[in-house]
View 1: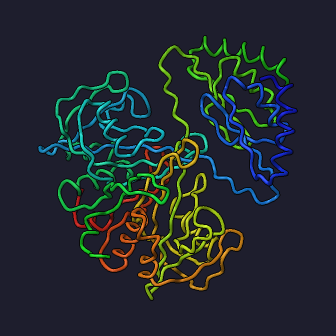
View 2 (view 1 turned 120 degrees about the horizontal axis):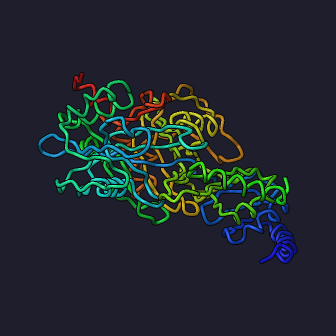
View 3 (view 1 turned 60 degrees about the horizontal axis):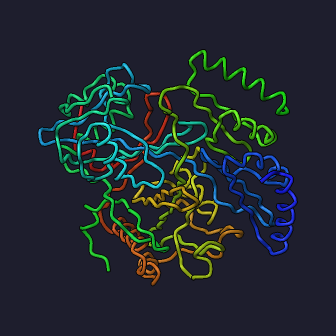
Length: 244
Length: 244
């Protein structure tokens, strides 16, 4: 569609929608229709969000206060604590990023895909980076950080997983090296000791490996709108009480 | 800038950047320059993300695999469990949304602003909706749900807060009613019992109010890049072990 056909159509529609008491008008423009972005903006639309192949514009046409849901603000990542029966943890060295060439051994980490459950992402990333099959156990801790990428924030979930296989097949494009390493040796790395965000996570994992530490377990629940979701909570403490 | 001046400039720059081995080129176009979106797309740019007043485009000009960080995928919300010494919880009825007119009493909830700490958001939302001052205690549980808004996901953190004031001053535009309600009465609402995602949260809160339940506490930590962040974990179990 060219903008000469688009603008009169849009104006007529906006006028109708206002009369009908609509509050907001959305336009999703695939990247092939980038020519219509400027005319839509001239008619009062603002950007709401964009993905690689489209931009979503919105026009709040009501006189009431704008109550549109905000754009996504966080990226979500996982860090995987996988320990075998010999008290060895699965660790990697990355080929890129800030740990490149530092010699630091770290837990496999990765980004949760859009629409993916945190527990599934942890299992997937461990498999992709090291070839190890795992089952999900618990979330032991999480961290929120800001301005990690442009204005957005990050949530990083430290996940405990139990290994179901032990032979490492490392992924070659992202991972320089991968191995099973005694958990104490992991925690004693100079880098870990220098940074309290790392040393605290190591301490949590060591506590979990030696003593009782209740993390949050994912329990499938149905929401009011009928969707299946995971609710993560401390199930160990919960079993101590009986509630109707 | 008009597109006739922009395009030759962009082409010359792209050619230079390629020669210098740059991998990606970003263009941030304020909404006033919506006229340059189409020419940028024609030169090979795709959308990366957008906020109301700008769109960010990116062009991966390297022959290597695209390793750009993904766009934000999650919105983050809080639900606030605030209980006084009489075992009454702070509850509200909302003027809009899916609970409008249902008579359901629910915890104050809200969206975490961009760049805002979860604990700060919980304190802010309780204050905004009810006028009650609180201090943050713990995260008791959280839920991940998908396709909550377009293709994005939600993370909802159930936060426990301790009240520091008790006189309710409800916010009029969003909140129909607000009160202190006996916690058992809250949990016994028919709606709560019908939906296991709500009843489970109620059960967690009741457990916390009656017995030992270890949630995740926010502990300030410094990251490797020098930022202050909050790491949330079970500090109660952690104090049982001494680690170097």
